[in-house]
Amino acid sequence: MKKIIHTNHAPKAVGPYSQAVEAGNTLYISGQIPVDPETGKVPATIEEQTAQCLKNIRAILAEAGYTIDNVVKSTVLLDDINDFAAMNEVYASVYTRDMPARVCYEVSKLPLGVKIEIETVAVK
Image 1 (cartoon, rainbow, N blue to C red):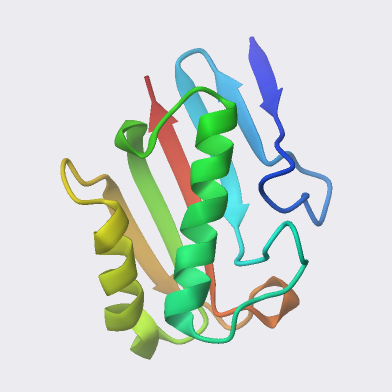
Image 2: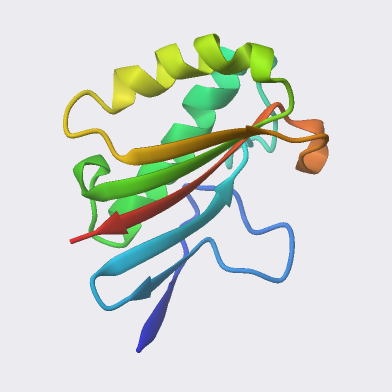
């Protein structure tokens, strides 16, 4: 059985998908881009954009009754792999122990011209 998760503390889906879907004890969070759900604005720098993506992920986790400690896998998409070190510094400030598995790719374009998108899987 699946349960659709939605919170107003993260950006609305910009297409025909859910913010997250819970199936059993696993939460699948759709790729989060760095849109501030209150203002609709996107921060300028990769550091700020990474922080906003992670803030959006935390909001969805909380809505579903999970925490950052439940995250087991992240997929990070960057529009410029040269931003990896800066992204990684912000990412490492959130995931400080029992880090999830992760993959990072450079892609040619991301929605709304953002620099980063992060997809997340969490398990209770």
